Image 1 (tube, one colour):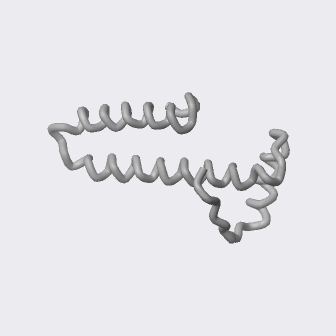
Image 2 (cartoon, one colour):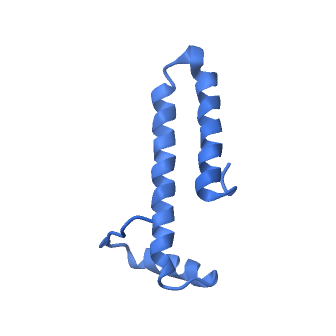
Length: 88
């Protein structure tokens, strides 16, 4: 991992309690919050990038199926590398 960068963020009390409860139920400690947030942010950025790419390519009707297949294949490969087999 690269040199960590400190973030200061504000979330609602309900979100704080929900995340900390979720982590505690899985035996995670306070220090695991940063790992959880980083994984969530990476996942969200990845999902948004995929959605934007699909939207941008939607106007290409002749190659749409081919493009979607290529995107799905790339997704499977990247997810396997980054996240293990958890995503499809």
